[in-house]
Length: 93
Image (cartoon, rainbow, N blue to C red):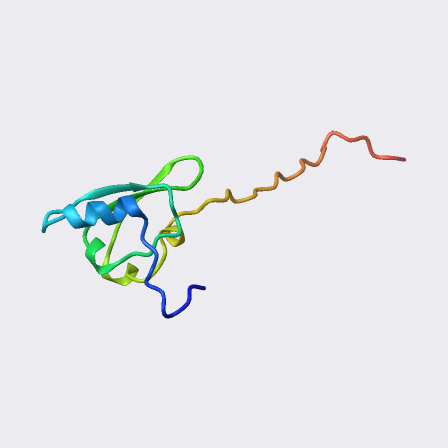
């Protein structure tokens, strides 16, 4: 948790693009998942790297204040295979 007296962290590259942004939509690419979403990022498309590929999402008003990493899944879900029962097994007499 970041101290309350510090400003929210936004990566340098994203901050530069936001300065150049006017009123048009802009797309950004980020590998830093710890950047905070600011109100200037509204209605923009952001590609966030999760370690394997880039996940794309549209920034909405509800996303302001959250980190970019909250909207990307970095771990695969573990799926266990079921064992097949052998139906051809001989029954003991």
